Length: 327
Image (cartoon, rainbow, N blue to C red; front, top):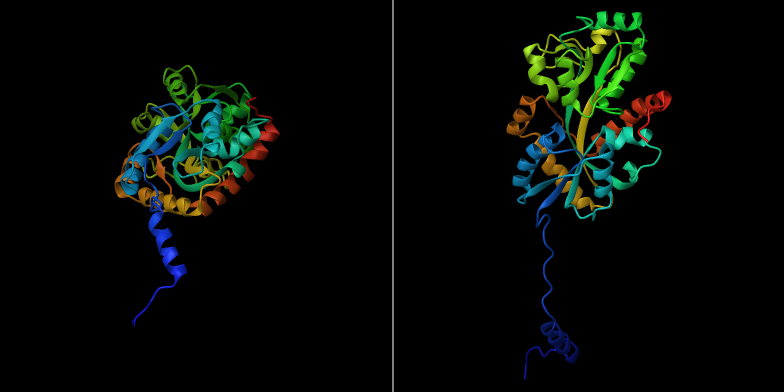
């Protein structure tokens, strides 16, 4: 009989293969909802940004993106939760300069380590900051305000959303570089500070644009200077601190990006970086962000790491020199 005759070993192998159950194919990522941790209360600027970006990111990924608010302890609660989550790409977090930079100097001990516990995915936005005065303004220009502060060191009240906030640290840096002192009045958030500024209970504050855009545009709050490197398109007549006060190289923002648990596989990080970048370049997303006073940012892990290096070099020495602490 001619033709191919399989050997005994081949027949046994074929029989075993037929008897084994079929192995399921590995599911493509993502195959279920993503959980997005926001370490601030619902309704604030950080929460609004996450929901805005998350809606378009969900469409791009083909899966729901569910926002979970875990506020408290200067973002430490949300950061610890994220750091201890499974590194499978299904838990992401909004991380800001507080979480990744300031807290390492503000707290003696942290329940997480930014370098050890997180992988950067990409940048999302920054919040422009203004040196602003209310109805009972002590000055009409930044130069006049600095003169007032020099004439009465440590007596002029300045409100911020809290100790160790980007607003507070920006004012501390401005005061140091301008050679003045002020009386810091920390609040629990921008809203109550702004209310007191409008009521005339406090003369000045460092105000982020999303929190005060309507009042700044309407003139109820006077913007003396913007702490950005260049004037804002929305308010081109407001000078930068660099131009108004001659503080060369001065710029300060509150900024935010997305991070994952450190051990998340490269392929997942790369996919999320790609989809987040596409989201941040979407004209509709950018338009909605700009409408509420946010500056869209793009940039993946490399740009994120470069920003962190610059921020650490600027802010950590300042915090330590001034002995600012939250514990």
